[in-house]
Image (cartoon, rainbow, N blue to C red; front, side, top):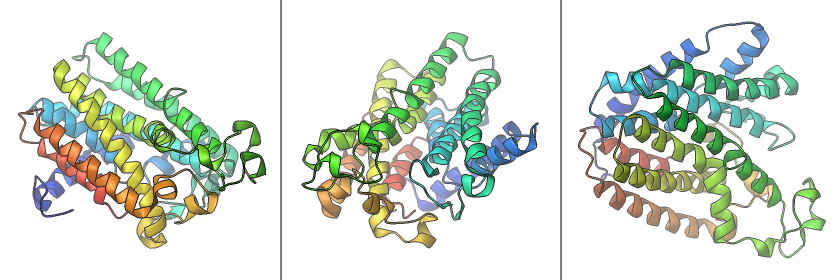
Length: 331
């Protein structure tokens, strides 16, 4: 991160390291061993196998920015934060399957289906999605109004399903493999029933739509859900909703850049997959410089938005630092 960040590296590290420890402990608790063992081994493999925990950190940090409650706020929001990480793990398991991106590595380790087989990996992803809802509804403290909790659960379903992540994945498949100037019918290794589009169809609206759904929807939910559960004002919820939208788009554009600028040791996954598959990424359509320019615009917009929200909690600079981290990360 650059030296212009709102909080010092040391302070940000303390903030995130402390929260990550609590997130890991809670995830392990919520994934305690059950029957059948093979299913839970597969679920635990992907959820507890490391990761940035960006989405959970966003959830907890947003709540702490809204409501200066320290450990009490963290305990209240932890079921939601862990549910989000389970949904994210599900998406990675499914994304890595041969019928999707066909990846062998994730976080520097063999992907779930390489260890447990395709059938069990698919079922583990399905189970994680349902277990996430179980944890969110059952483990969120009773101090949270049940109608508020149900609205959060409903929004998680929307962010994950046909209005959000799944819709984005279908769009991603639809626009994967397009070669200028050939039509979609000339594509290989792509289900031709998904699209009749040509490369010329790609524009900023399509790329943003894919990114905001496939990646951004869950990131945006991470922020919105915390604001809702922490009792933020409507003005704060609206502002943070936009912040989540900005951060989600920025995170995916940064991911697009890393696919062409990163290496396997740093990324923990195979680089160059987007280009090889001819995915509809920001870099492919607008180039490396265009992606970097867009990230700079999003960072400025996000910073201006946060400064105008007047969040009172001393932990609120973490949201600025998390925005910078999402944009300037190297893995």
